[in-house]
Amino acid sequence: MMELLECIHIYKDYDKKQVLKDINLKIPRGKIIGLLGKNGMGKTTLIKLINDLLTPTSGEVLVNGKNVGIESKRIISYLPERTYLDKSMTVKQTLKYFTDFYDNFDIEKAKRLIKDLDLEIDTKISKMSKGMQEKLQLILVMSRNAELYILDEPLGGVDPATRDYILDTILNNFNEDASVIISTHLISDIERILDEVIFIDKGKIILSSNADKLREKENGSIDEIFRRMFKC
Amino acid sequence: MNFVFDNDRPIYIQLVEQLEIYIISGKIQPGDKLPSVRDLALKTKVNPNTMQKALSELEDLKLIYTERTNGKYVTTDNKLLNKFKSKYAKEKTKKYINEMKELNFTKEEIIEFLKEEDK
Image (cartoon, rainbow over all chains, first blue to last red; front, side, top):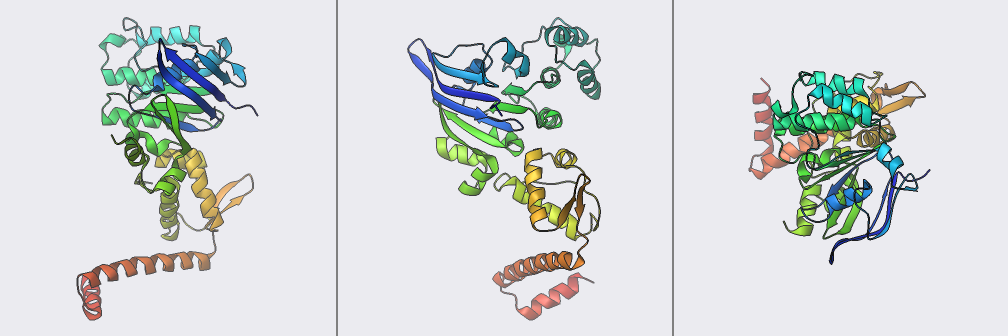
């Protein structure tokens, strides 16, 4: 079977600055993968390339064996680092927007998850707390029947209760036919749910391993191993 | 099921250990059917792949078995369960005695403490 996602010798330059250097990646189905690196090391650039929002300087991004484009946008569900919702809309309007935009959006599932949060469907997004907005965005992204979910820093600046909610929601909605890539620098919060980890530093992939194998080999938590490696 | 994990060690090994305790303590009875991998993963808040790995390990240890298409069950082999129980008992006792000996207690004193505590 085709790899779900493959990056082949990807380079990305901004003007003269090289932000990604020879990235090679293969992501199979049925895994939760942590893309781990400090801020400014190329995580978001790589994610934008996979989502076809940027074009690589050289190299190829393949989804199900085909170059990224309209088809890959359909099967990738992406949670960007910064909010993309129109805050003047209500929850209900946002749901309609997602239904119109994505043919694989499961509105019933989204409604169920929203109800679990005790969130009124007529609430305006601008009236919701930051934590609630984060939760709603995650619900929208995870309610698409996608093949690849890409979450860019889903835990940035949320309180511990919201963090637990986010991790639970990822686990609850993860299925073996799909994969989830989570980019973060907050490793200790998330490492328990990861199958595979990828360390990225200065635009390069430094390490790629099964999470438990790495713990066994290096005798420590992923967070510790990462800190040891990059002395942060 | 309230499992606590330490990120320093492989999660699947910790799952095996904690599930072993559930089984040998009788919290899950011999012959009981286990919840599905997915449900177990959700209850313990781990990745389903990690849970799958832990269950394969328990299956290798023969503490659980798979009935084709029907799910996973706890072994009814009491001999095996007792073997695991004594293994745990020995480990715990050894650890306790070593700690007491570090504190310079004699064997007789240790036995006295045990009797006293259990009253």
